[in-house]
Length: 150
Image (cartoon, rainbow, N blue to C red; front, side, top):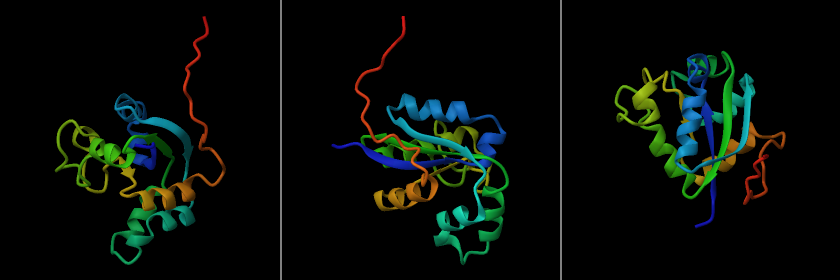
């Protein structure tokens, strides 16, 4: 199966709580490769595009306020079945109901403070990656060899 790419956002609560390293390690230990990574404070425009499907919901203004409140980490992960693998590692949306061993189950606090966003389909991943990586920060070459200095 060819490698698949997905967008992961480590939301402001993950960054503020110092969980970035732990969360990244879980994705990497599962065999997903980081091919794009940046820390940014999202613009309202980016956040509105990203969460467009929620625009008519009552929680939309507070969602935009939260996601643009401080830095987040945007990731492009690559690997076999990357979308399914990442979403399984992330866990249920409501962190209070997420299974132990998942990122949200171990570290999330609520439905709103659930640390991570992951694309839910190949189409969503393509759309979302275009929103967050417009500046060419995704590595498109395959790495077969790791060079160790010594």
